[in-house]
Every structure is written in C-alpha cells, then in structure tokens.
Length: 189
Length: 252
Image 1 (cartoon, helix red, strand yellow):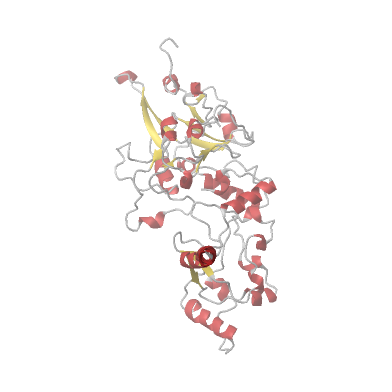
Image 2 (cartoon, rainbow over the protein chains, first blue to last red):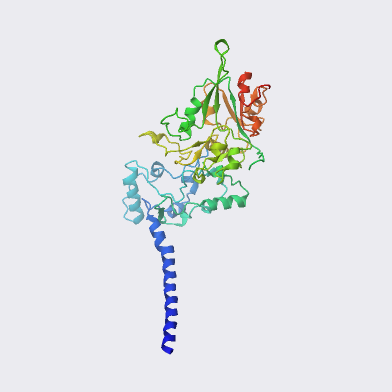
C-alpha cells in the first residue's frame, strides 16, 4: 500500500516535471528559436558611425533632408558622402580602415551603398516626413546618434520587411492621440 | 456608411466638358501609366480588362443628317453616398477622409466583388490574373501607386498620391496644405487632356475654377436620381447628351 502511494506521488511529480519542461520548451521555441528562424540577421555594408558624425556637430537634417518639393530625400548619396570622404586616409585605425573601404568600394567605383533601411515601409504605405517635421527623429527612429556601430538589421524571411518597421497600430495610436484622421488614404496608396 | 451623406470641408471634384472631348484616349493612357495598370492583353474584352478611366462613345441614334456622337470619359465618380462602401464586408473601401475620395485598400480586400456589382457606374475592376509587365517595361512602374495582386478590386483614386505630394510641397514652401492653390493638385488625366475638356479642383473652394463650372446650367451628373451625389460633373450644351446621363420616362 505504502509503496503504491509513493509511486502515485512520483507519477504526479513526474507529470508536473514533464509539464514544466514542456512549458519552458514551448517558451524557448516561441521566444528564441522561432524568431531566429523567421528573421535573418544582416549587417550594414559599411560600419558607419553616427556617433563620430554627431560629435562633429552634424545635425540629422544635414544628411537626411527634405527635397525642395517636400519629398524626403532619404539616405545621402555616395557623392554627398564623398564631399568629405573623397580620398583614402591610409590610417590603420578601425575607423580609418572602414573609411578606406568605403572610398575604395563605392567612391572610386561610383556605386551607391546598399544601406539597409530599418524603417522601410511596405509598397502600399505613403509616409510624409514633411507632415511629421514637428517631432524628434528619435520618436520613431532608433537613436543611432548614440551608436558607434549600426545595429543589426533583421529581415523577415517571409515578408522581406525589416523587423523594426513601424507597425500600423503604432501609426494609428499616435494619430488617434493627436486627433489626426485615421482614414485609410491618409497613409495608404 | 450607407444612407448617410458625409460632408467634408474639402470636396475634390472633376468637371468634364463632353462637348470639348475628342475621344482621343490620352486620359486613359496617362491613367494606366500613372497608376501601374498592366498593359492590357486584350482590351476589347471588357470583362477581363482594367481601365480606371474609360471613354464611352455616345450616339443620339439618329441617321445621317441628324446623326451626332459624343465621348464621355468616366473616372470613379467618388459618390457622396457611395453604394460600394455600404456593401463592403471588410471595410476595404471607405469614404471617410477629408476631400471625399473613396478609398480602396488592396491588402484588406477579399475579392468578393460586392462593390463591383453595387457600383452603378462600372468603375470598379477585379484583377482576375496577376499583372504582368513585358520584359523591361517594369522599369516604367511608378513608386507612387502600389501594384495590385490578383484577386482584389481596384478603381480610380483621383490620383490620391498626387494630393499627398501637393500637400508635402505646400508644407515645404510654408503654405497651408489644407488650402491648396487651384492646380496644385490635379489628376493625371486632367493634366494630360489635350483639349482641356477635364478640370479638377475643390468644389467648395471659391478660388478653384471647378467651383464656378458646376454652376453652369449645362452641368449635370450621371444617374443623379439614384442619390449617389457624385463628385464628378459633366457639361454638355446638347440636350440629348444630358438626357443620356440618367433614366427618363418617355413622357419626360
């Protein structure tokens, strides 16, 4: 009788243990393994240091500016980078080597850098930077001015979009709190 | 939604002078390139072709000395009380933005085609096949309009992207984006009409030309008796053309 009782107690303990292992396993799969499978990690073609440039007193708008027609010009071209970085430095520091790599691969060959844009929106979204000029850049964008190395870019293997892209609910929540229209065509095209 | 008319401070409208239209089709061609409509495989098959802007030929049905024809360009009429919106089961099409343009959101559309059936103006098109651009022609695609996959309904948007661009340009130049100058925002068909038959602007803004044009005694709208309250007006000095714009009893 006593043996049987201890067996059944052990059975319950075993079941609890199995459930716990299963629960932890499911958490690991859901939070670690699946995201790893879903997103491919990519690094920027050039280790551009926003910190160095921000410390020189360059504002965001000097490189990422609006065009005269109000359209956002996006990322600077190789030519505008080459205004400062036109020649190889020959320095042996990590930053110097990275500049030389940029000059050799892109400035000399006249090719645009295939930067990975963390915030690229899907094809059917129209975002106006001109309409959002009153906000700090960091309200939506990563505060890259504090980053010496650009953060990793996570690309969704299924959709091809960046993991950091602003989601529709985020746009809608801010619009709702500001009293701005959430009509479809305000953002969609 | 259904049955209740929505009023907006800005009401974008088009005025089409049928007597000036030569039926050249520049509006149709410019619309197709502007809005990424694929080159049509068989444009004469009206059930399988897509043309957000279509020019219809009207005739008075009389023989020679009295024979007369007219051309009627037909974009989306952007109804004030749109029959397509009230039938959409997934709210993929709505009329809720200032300006009164009826929206169509392709990722939300489930392709049930209720709206195609409901629209009395036949402005809605269903994509039966994925669009195909011949080799090299995909370079002509515009980034301002999203490309539709098969299985969704599409329609004229009054080149809504041109409005957003016009608002951005106004902001960049320190002007009020909600009070655009006449001509700051026009659709591509209006811009490309060689005979000046098409005009576009805010129907409620006295500074815009269309505000005056719709007061003409020759101005009318299509199927006005349905109560759709469209934002597209037509002008014709010929009575038989105006009569074709709606259904009349023989005694009328």
